[in-house]
Amino acid sequence: MSDAGFDPTAPLTASGNLRRRRVVSRFAESGATIAAVVAVAVLGIVTYTVVSRGAKAISLDFLFTGEPTGIGPAILGTGLIVLLATVIAMPIGVLIAVYLTEFSGSRVSGFVRSTLDLMNGLPSIIVGLFLFVLLVKPTQNLSGFAGALALAVIELPLIARGSQEVLLLVPSSLREASDALGVSRWRSVLTVILPTALGGIVTSTVLAVARAAGETAPLLLLTPAPIGTTFNFNIFEELPSIPFTIFILSEEANPEGFTRAWGCSLVLLSAILFASLGARALLARSRARMTR
Amino acid sequence: MSNLDSFAGFGRDATSVPGRVRIQTGPVVAPGANGAASREAGLESVFEAREVSVYYGRKRALAAVNLRIPRNRITALIGPSGCGKTTFLRSLNRMNDSVPSFRIEGEILYHGHDMYASNVDRVEVRRRIGMVFQKPNPFAKSIYDNIAWAPRNLGMKKGLDERVEEALRGAALWDEVKDRLKDSALGLSGGQQQRLCIARAIAIEPDVLLLDEPASALDPIATASIEDLMHSLKGRFTIVIVTHNMQQAARVADRTAFFSLDSAHGEPSGTLIEFADTEKIFSHPNDPRTRDYVSGRFG
Image (cartoon, rainbow over all chains, first blue to last red; front, top):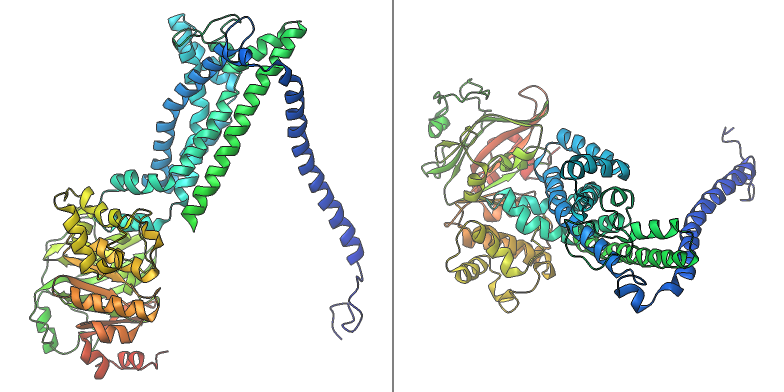
């Protein structure tokens, strides 16, 4: 007598507690599906709202001129601040990644990795406050530069961790090949490993840029340029930025201001969405190239 | 024990290196190991392994290997999987150093210099002792740049085009790729990629080439071309090849070392059973274990 509890000759339909197990399974499956749909829906609703309300504010004047109607200076300001932040954060981030994958031992690397993950979770207002106390307070000077430094701190862990993930994908057989040729590891990093991983490094940088471009809290503290400024390239002065402009405009009890705030949001959102989508496409391509 | 005459250096006490354990038990050679005095024995040796044991963590992978590798000859290392052949090969250019738990005892002399002495630079070791791996591992660069990469980085920038051509000719690949040197090396077939890796290794004119099962991922035709290649490289380089393919060892090697698992030193670990001229190993080996292995009755 078998103890399997079923008759092997019976037809192959559900028997025993399979019916109940199947109900539980369906229930769990639909819960998970709903959760995923909600996530997509939230993004969809946000995007729809921003597009529908912001679209009527968008015009060439709005995008490319200064006050009173346009947000050109804010676009330029955000561009400058984020560019500077990336110029600072990218080399350091990539070097950290190179250190973690090529030079450090596993224990040190684990410690640095957790540090980076904690740093990634640092509230941006605290980063802003930190730079305010460190840089703005002593020099008595609010500046786009201070804002850029704050954004660099925010970008750094993203670039470092992202690049590290990509460097780990570079096959170790390439490292062996270059080691066996009597070339020092640093030359290999520079001329074999980094070029192989370039696509992924650019991707993680773009994702970090997308994240930094939307950060508001540090800019609020460090470079709160008032509405009505003109185009300004001097990063050591207060620069206007899109997130801060959105903040100011929505504080005003002024319907026309609201429309412009929505317009700003649309500009920011589309920049970030396109950057992220482009970066992901790039990453998929370079991943496919490396792991084939 | 007249067969030990050719290993006169064994019992000598070399200057000790601090921080490294050395077993000073004198010659411990399994009966029959290293065979009878060989006609190759008079050759200058490039490597001389003395009582080499390798550990990965607490596990001993290789026990007390004594071996001399003659210059400008092909030496094959054969034996079953897990018997330490590749470990031994990778110890010859310190590729094992990157394995965190790796530890070596005894000494390996390279032209009389202790390879594991504290003042030895790993990068310099590998510059002189090149290696080709089991799986072809070309860089994601053009064919030309694959070959030119190491010479460029080592400062051998003069006559780079000639050097690349010579290396590709040396690896019997020139005629197949001369019209597409700028194409990606990843577009080559497996056999071509492996010959490219050999060309890349000989482009920096090393003293020794270590080949770790270079043909195991290739089809018989590509294998044959790699073997022809080895014959043509013989005389210019000292070649040490690890192979699972006994026919291959018989075809290409001058000397053959048979490794196997053995419990003579405690727990089973890789041991050199017999080292002699290839002909002797395959026709009338001294050790019954060698005979069983080469005749396919191993196990």
